[in-house]
Length: 260
Image (cartoon, rainbow, N blue to C red; front, side):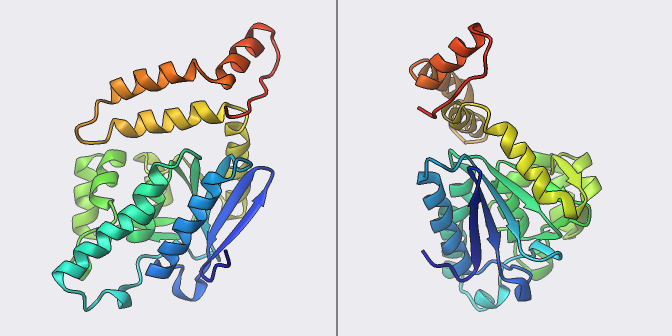
């Protein structure tokens, strides 16, 4: 598929998805959300892709928010539909991908941008990154999962303050409270992410997919995360990767996982 708002590059079993609207600070609009859905869906189905890195073009922004001009005149019904469709198409979709997704947060990650970063499996930030959910300053609240994922990551009190004040959090504080895993110079951001991706790829893709599902289950209402873990653990015993991993360990060699 030819994309207008994103770039997709693949190398060494790693896909890099770049949101490419630099004149809009990579703001999310409907077209970009749709393109990201198609890109992630396609990459998920590509057995050659083991890890996905998501970033924004330029040096200023990962994603500086949603494109406000698209919904400034929406009705109550249209606003609800916007949130529901966005969560289904992109944010929940990314969170539940079997392929690990790393957010490389370069610069501003605000509103829908931070919500997108939080839907990824974890986040690496550049030193100049700033993160926030400023929606209350516009008379609205985060609608792409921000009120749910932010408290899960940094705690209820900090999330309440961040959302109520509409303030921005610098990279060092985001690291301190657990919103991002690492902070690195911007020039090193992608290479650092690729380094982690390379370490991930040494392990079983099928086991990683089960781990993602089990971890996510802990945050789903009405789902018993321990039960999900037990079921996923058992399923691993029926895979070629389990046989290869245990055999390689006993033979004192590196495992050659196939993802089956």
